[in-house]
Amino acid sequence: MGNFLMSCPVKPGRYYLHNWKLGNMDRIAFRVAGSYRSSVSFLTGESTYNKKFFDNFTLSIVNNTLCLDLDIIKPLSRGFRAHIEFQLSLGRSKKYQRVFAHVLDVCEVVTTIKNNIFKSWFQSMLQHGNFMYNCPVAKGHYFLHNWRLESRLVPTYLYAGDYRVKAHFFYGKHRSKLEDFIVDLIVYAQLKPS
Image (tube, helix red, strand yellow):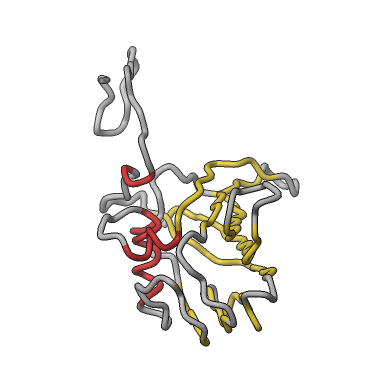
């Protein structure tokens, strides 16, 4: 497959990687203990929601933590998906470069036993709110209070810098006439070496 080293510094030489494939997001590795861990600071956020599904959907950043309060008026049944996109700021400009994007089945993430980056984030959120492992998501009031993205949950491929994270939740086919919009979230955050 390849001859990459598992240690730093990387010595000069020829390195190769052959026939490597990333089949799905389940294979993304998390950082292991070390001095290169990163800390995340939430800066600001915003949300836009479909009043067919929510009576209220409030996103706020309080003391560097993420808070959500939402009132679901129409159950969110199986089949709702999310397009998650991480973008890195290009210097002092307001332009952002996409680092990665992924479309996922939200119910599958919530109910599956398999662990991946999104499941790890959801499990962390469970400790700070009243979200459940259930799908469909019933009518009612849900909240997330004082949630921080712990350094152990930061993907290894993200560099230090200013980020914009977009989450677009929907039914149907993404960016098509068949799409039924649920909610959009945008969070601005800063990733710093610890």
